[in-house]
Length: 122
Image: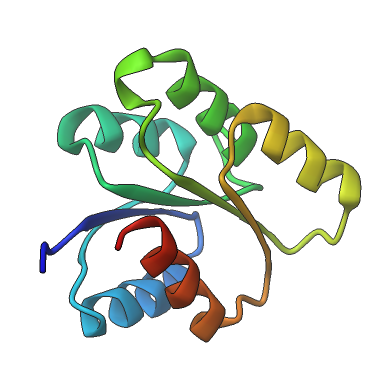
C-alpha cells in the first residue's frame, strides 16, 4: 500500500493538528499550510496525492486556492476536498464549479472523511 501524501490547508492550528493525527493514524503522510497561498506553494513543492482546504483563510481563501490549482494543468489530477463551517448550498455549488471534488461541512465527520479519502486514494 502506497503512503499517500495529503495536504491540509487551514488557518486553524487545532484543526490542522486533529486532521494530521487522524491521517497519520491511517498511514497517510501529511504536509500542512496555514492559508491558500501557502497551500498553493506546498502543492507546487510536493505535488500531493490529495488536498483538503478550508474556505475562510487569510491571503487566499479555499475557493481561490482551488481555482489556482485547477488553472495549472499539471495539478488537475489532485483531488481537492473543500470544507467550510458555512452551511450554504451556493457555497457548495461554487466549490464544485471551482473544481472541488468533495464538499464537507464543519465540524467534520472524521469517519466519513477517511471513507471519502479511501474512495479517492484506493
